[in-house]
Amino acid sequence: DTEVTQTPKHLVMGMTNKKSLKCEQHMGHRAMYWYKQKAKKPPELMFVYSYEKLSINESVPSRFSPECPNSSLLNLHLHALQPEDSALYLCASSQRGQDEKLFFGSGTQLSVL
Amino acid sequence: RKEVEQDPGPFNVPEGATVAFNCTYSNSASQSFFWYRQDCRKEPKLLMSVYSSGNEDGRFTAQLNRASQYISLLIRDSKLSDSATYLCVVNGGFQKLVFGTGTRLLVSP
Image (cartoon, rainbow over all chains, first blue to last red; front, side):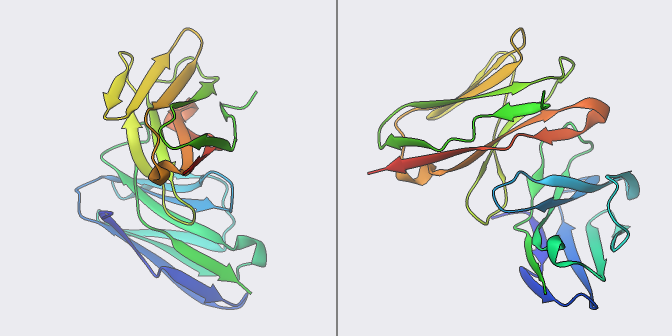
């Protein structure tokens, strides 16, 4: 079983909706990540939080807004998404940094109508 | 040249076969190397870290060749449950992890 928990597992939203994805880990990891994955493609990095501070934003559109309330939690707020944003959104954590092994949550399958 | 390159496959093998995948990387300064396994519509799961000395875990063996800048994964005695996509992951510039496009393996009875 994964030690990174993501909710919800599935989400369908309209282009005018506001929703949030949630991620939680209790492994004491200090780096947390959001990835986006389209079918038959590798995961693409979106954001990295290191010690609760945003350290990397891979030029992600502002309709995606990350938040790290504490060292165990990571949220991704969604607003005014486009159909092309439909994908699997994966949260991951690692002990300290980006050159370490990642532990992934089971993901949120997002459909934007 | 892509930072991390893999043959997308699919590799179709019968149960019991031995199969090997390679992954090449472009950044000679890379220090961290991993193989992940991903089932359809599931999250990637760490299969193995790859060390300079090579490492083995049961039927799986990973090797690193720094001179030629590639890593390999060997699976012996393939099982039906080994059918999945195998992702090569390497740390690139600015300490970022870079994923290969994955190699799909299909093991048939």
